[in-house]
Amino acid sequence: MTTDQFSVAGRTAIVTGASSGIGRTIAEQFAADGANVVVCSREQENVDPVAEDIAESDRPGEAVAVECDVMDRTAVEALVETTVDAFGGLDILVNNAGASFMAPFEDISENGWKTIVDINLHGTFHASQVAGEYMRDAGGGAIINVASVAGQQGAPYMSHYAAAKAGVINLTTTLANEWADADVRVNCIAPGFVATPGVESQMGVSASAIDRSSVDRQIGTSEEIADIAQFLASDASSYVVGETITAEGVPSVMEELPS
Image (cartoon, rainbow, N blue to C red; front, top):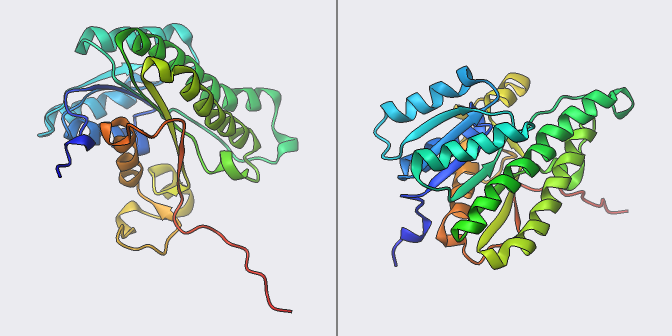
């Protein structure tokens, strides 16, 4: 048995929200395996260093940085066009762009609600629809949505984010059904706490302090999410369609005390 089926070498991927954290790690891991990656975020200056780091490393894959606000349909269309022009095709889309803030539901303004839903859900709509059209015409591809356990379980003080991510999870199932006959596989990852720079600044937990060999934990690393993304992007997951893989460590279980 070989492990060739887990490879994404020679393929082309777009990773949104790739300036840091999970998105950056996914892009770097894909490039390390030989995929060409287009990394994007809303600010060119934030995503340029990612492409430069990949180019200056010994990773065999190439990288291009593109400024793209996933809420802007024209920008998303330009992103896909740039990708095809640069690398001759598009095989993988990772919808990772997202944002949130914490507030009680009654304190969230209409603008605040709309902004978070637009970035997390509407942005996934734009990117999936534009990239999906290309993939269907080209003979197939893989779309990987990054949601959250908040979209499965709810999240106090993050109602807008949880609602948007629940929409992403449902959209995954729906698109997987609609596009299967065009050989486009759509799947989703729902991470729990991951030691990204943002989480580290809020919770004080550094990725360097996490032992991947430890089972008894409820915080993961970006690399662990990237491993799942590579599985879903590769031929190894050819029979996985419309699924949401939850990665949150040890599940919380309410124990009933004896009476």
